[in-house]
Image 1 (cartoon, rainbow, N blue to C red):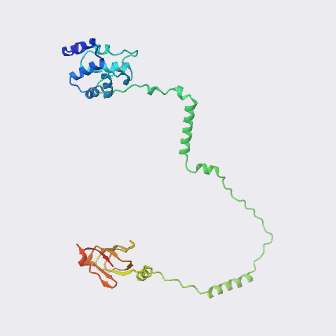
Image 2: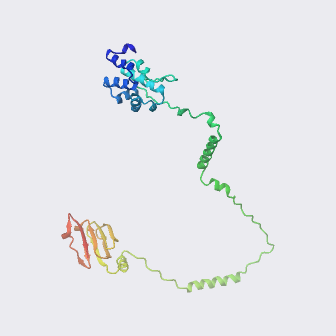
Image 3: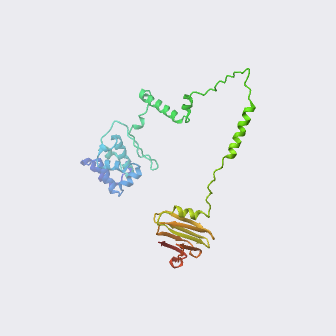
Length: 295
């Protein structure tokens, strides 16, 4: 790489003999070429914090000395300078140097040795294979069909044995004793009067039922529909007395505690009678919709 060394970089590398550190020399070379440390990290595909630790001579923040030397050599390769003087300022490790500059299209991964933790020796420990057996047993119980254990533990019902004992001389029935009793029962049934059933409420009797169950202080309200309209009536207790679309010709008789909150969707096709008096809907409507309180 000595052939790629420019004359402008010669004075910077000469500072190695005057006591400059490797990190300071790398930082000065990078700054002189106007290359940001983030761009350098992207080119080498290493974390920016690693480069900052190397330039600040914080060897304890790097994995090991071999990694620091390989990273410094890779930085010199990007900066097109000879790495000999920089590597001379770094401590030398016993391991072979790592090649971190493997191309811009390959991601760099740190080697911390944790991936080599599993081995056959660990699998031979009783604690490890005992835990595996417990996991397999739990999985088998979880995948077992529901109710299978209960069906196995319950005893299977057996059919009861029926022992037939033949009778030599079965007693004969006397028809003369049964027929009078049946006749007497029939006469008794004819003599008992049937109770009268209460009539089923009809649509015509609905207003009468509503008036019976209406609370004290309720006011009567009659809704008559001449054209399809949506009507909602809610009394002072918050009880919804009516909330649906009524067809032409329908009439609803309601009773509730005042004030009654009334909403009418079609004023032109709706008529309200409060205590027998017609309510002026047209004067309290807007766009053929009325919202009013009736007392």
